[in-house]
Length: 253
Picture (cartoon, rainbow, N blue to C red):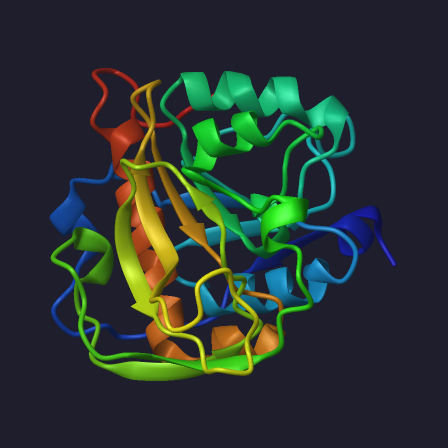
């Protein structure tokens, strides 16, 4: 297998048709939105499934490392952390974010980066802290019947999805909830019966935008059209902070 085949997957499959939403509505730059997904270990299969679901409109590359094979990827609008990045990646990621690069954190992408939960919180608006939210959360069915008014929720209709949703994350008070649901009684939480924020939007202090999702462990999640639409909307919203900057339609690192 080629080096590209071992470490990087480029998704290019027909796009889904999403009624009532257009990427142009968010004033994205004219060239295709490009998304880099960092994933390793058991998260890689789910990340590849996500990349396939994003094919067509969103050019998506999945890699275990950044830089990739000694090169710095260019023209990246949004970075997706599906796994917690290793210490050597953090400086490159921070440089990208300071340029108002979009960030999406899914599943283990919400772990404390380099054992520093405050850095994760500043980047993503939410953090998975071992002593707070590292319980053995079972898979449970979350139903979403209503949605706050936000560009990320555009085009969504009520749906439900079974996932390994993480509960009791620490969230920045400024996050805008996107998906909320109440876990069933068999899910251990700090406050039983309390509604949990499972996805959120966050305007960072550096001027960029982030989106967090407290699920994503299983590849089958990205066969759910509503979840694919949600992530496409999130990519458009986070990338638009880059596109709106004068003379900076794409972030180069």
